[in-house]
Picture 1 (cartoon, helix red, strand yellow):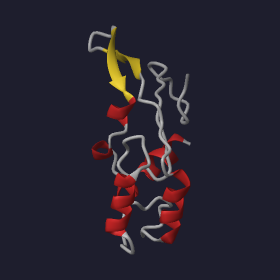
Picture 2: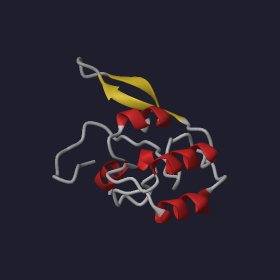
Picture 3: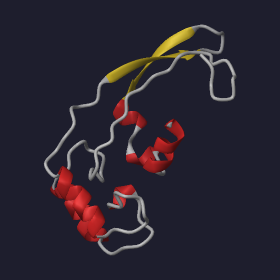
Length: 120
């Protein structure tokens, strides 16, 4: 397998991620907590997805409320655990347990949109 620049990759990696419109706090449920985040930031400027800017235009407004309302009471199944092979210093491989919630915790991602754009 090669990357976009044609460099050989050391291993094949795959991971699962989720996208749920309106899930501001990334708990896999669109509920009153997400609505509360939207209400607290309503009419605010320079906001992020975690502050209820669901369409990534920098502000929280009626469009974001509409996105939340369309997904209200929806949820996703609990994250699965994936085993990823990681190279060791000696060149051998070992298995590390990685959960999708570890990969996509809101404190570890500065911008949801940036990550999605890089994956495409």
